[in-house]
Amino acid sequence: MATAEEQKELTLIDHLVELRDRILKSIIAIILFFLCLFYFSNDIYTYVVDPLIRALPEGSTMIAIDPTSPFFAPFKLTFYVSFLLAAPYVLYQLWSFIAPGLYKNEKSVAIPLFISSVLLFYGGIAFARYVLFPFAFAFFISVAPEGISVMPDINSVLSFALTIFLAFGIAFEVPIAVFILIWTGIAEPDSLSEKRPYVIVGCFIVGMLLTPSDPFTQSMLAIPMWLLFEVGIIAGRMVKKRQPKDEADASG
Image (tube, rainbow, N blue to C red):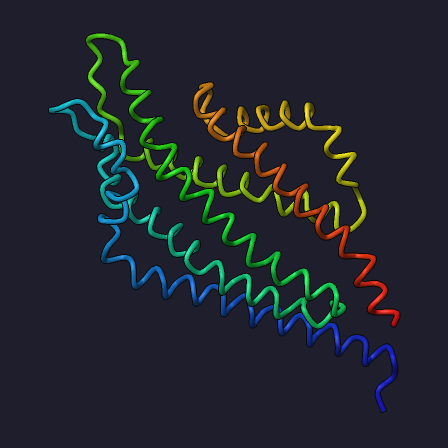
């Protein structure tokens, strides 16, 4: 008969094996998405940089300084897109791993949080692609000094786009972070509201750190972050009002 220590060791090994299997499933999902999308890699790249192409002066085109860029730039972008598309499945694997250790009331909140975090991350990327890019690229090109031909390198544009996508995706998670702080009791809605001036300054500092060093792009990130902070406070107030009722129902 196995001792308590041996049973504990077996349980730990079982968890590690399960974690390994779920990581492998997530990697396989990303690879499958990549294999399906690889044929369309050039189309995906063109779609992402289309706002820049439209903003370029007549007769100007994008260029490839590195001879390998025409292949590796779309390749790299397709990999990131594959990861984004597989993200719900990856999060599902994560959820399936940690769910058995959660209480019922924690599960009831965690599931909407998982779904909301994915949707908000996608929303941040969509905001960057459809709202920021058309204005930002048109602005950057319009302020080019006279006599300068704007011909962006495809690698530089990809690096800029991925940085912006990641920055906006993370920034749009602000309501989730605020909600968790209130839900867990770490912060109160009123105390967060009182810190609003500091939060606004912090949003602009984050915008400065996560985006290129121009006030326009920084503001396009900082203002939505502040508004999403307010959304998080509203959601936190709602869950605070429900907590006494849920506790009463649980005790009853």
